[in-house]
Amino acid sequence: MVDVQTVEIQIEGMTCMGCVGAVARLLESVEGVNSVEVSLDEKLATAEVSRGTTADDLINGLSGSSFTAWPKGGKAEVDCATPTSESIITEDTTPIRSDLSFEIEGMTCASCVSKVEKAIRSVGAVEDVRINYATHRASVTLNDLEDAESASRALEKAVSKSGYEARAVNRANRRVEAKERESKQKRESSHWFRRMFVGALLSLPVVIIEMGGHLYHGVTEFPGHRLVSFLLTTVVMVIVGTPFFRSAWKSLKHGTTNMDTLIALGSGTAYTYSSVVLFGSWSNVPIGDGMVYFESAALIVTLISAGKWMESRAKDSAGAALKALLELSAKSARVLSGSEEVEVP
Image (cartoon, rainbow, N blue to C red; front, side, top):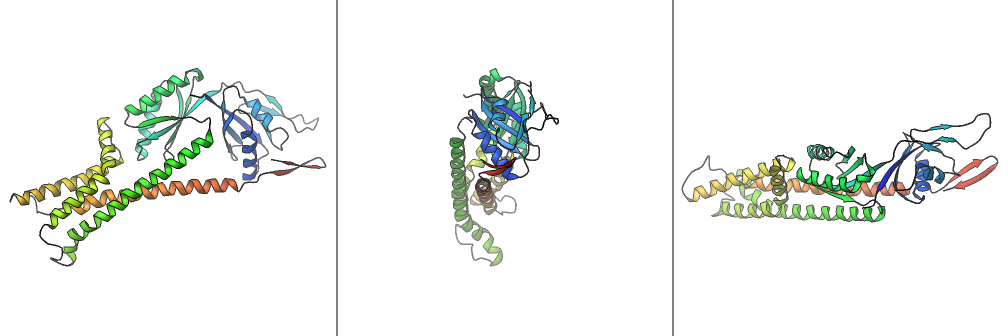
């Protein structure tokens, strides 16, 4: 595993998103820098760097530009008696911490986020945890840089015990990671689209058979119509509902519940009750009012699959929009230095 460090520097001189883009490009060009996040509101740049790269390296990367930088927690002092564009830097002695990133699988709701965060915080070396449900990423700050590798294994084990899966992400190559994330997002979208399509294709006849009689009495009550509904719904439950039942069972084994538990409970109850009523009618054993709810079981998993597909499409579209927005940022800026105009990247 490649150790990475979090280095933060304060930056003065940024006035717009163009400045943010310019600062990000300058810092990304510094050797050893893996990723950079720049906040215009906080006037702060947070960089993930390889071991050995310091805040001074980042500050030097901004030299020659119109921006002034100093380590976060340090103090930038300008000698007003002698006008100058350079700042006197007081070095920040705060120890650099190790920051790890994990891909979390199995989260389905905000409750899952809380459970994963609790599991991660149970590991002694953890100082801070930030989990993004939209990207299914967890950023973990450790208080001991030398223990990063063993802490990573401990974190993966702790998350696994809570019913989820964590995979350490190598942030040394951000482009490869971004491509892998984009490819995974497309596979997930295709996965849910196929399940939604199969569910809709098979659920529609079940709805017509079970509900059509309410509109036109006797139209759909042909011999064996309930058996047809049972068989079609069974296929829907196996093909479309399997991910929900698998996730619910996995959560129950760890003594927890999630959104999939509710989905499995609702659709499973409707399917099981309807099956019992159907088999009871064959044995001349009346159960309840004799009504079946196969269409409810099929529609629950189908509609939730449709929601999952739309969610994955929205994530994909949002990522593409943000990428396109960043491409619109200015590639360079003209800076007036004295009487000379200088173009900086």
